[in-house]
Length: 62
Image 1 (cartoon, one colour):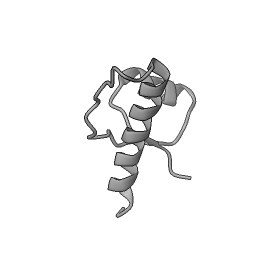
Image 2 (cartoon, one colour; image 1 turned 30 degrees about the horizontal axis):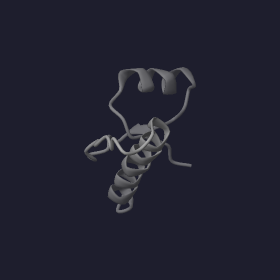
Image 3 (cartoon, helix red, strand yellow; image 1 turned 90 degrees about the horizontal axis):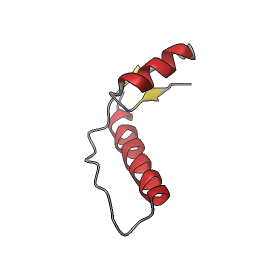
Image 4 (cartoon, helix red, strand yellow; image 1 turned 120 degrees about the vertical axis):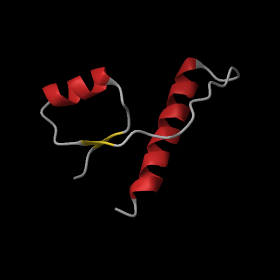
């Protein structure tokens, strides 16, 4: 299974390394836009989905 870390966060990389996962880093190019009409939970889910979809769409050719 291919594991992709869609973040440039040093902390997330550190956690992946501590868990000893074999992964690659491909940061999302998606712009993070906060929607004030949504709750924190809804915004988190929405942004996470957008970032994951962006990386998925851009890695299907590999």
